[in-house]
Image (tube, helix red, strand yellow):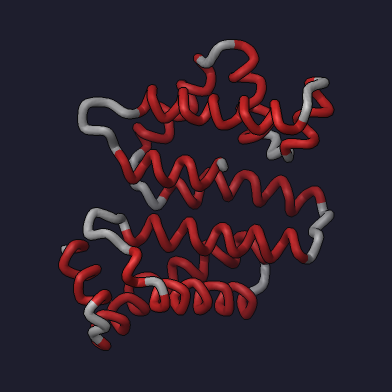
Length: 189
């Protein structure tokens, strides 16, 4: 179904875009509203994400999970929106961190994968686990991680990316749940 739908989008079939809007707009708008706390802004962000998809539809592959792809795009747009407005309210930041981990991964419909990610982080060697916890759970930036661990920002980036690679390696079983790994990387990178 998804493969044929993506193909219809790539062929610029008008009905496919109507179906895309009908299928995803409300869910994506709720997701965006959880981040930006404003319905009109959430609608604008989702519309921009759908327009961006339309403009770059040729980059889609038949194997993609369109819902997860759009959820990540909307989440990233929301975070950019908040960053640009320099949201300082700590309660909003904490809420965003919680909803970021919940909502974006929920599009995977795979609780087992989410549990595996968390247990994999818990089982990482000391320094990698500490870096992951600072980056993914405390949502610290690379420069903040570097300051806390008394390392360079470049070292913090390298260690975060190595930790992500270890997580991806641990999650890539025989079937290699690729979309889960891609979404995981996009969410936490």
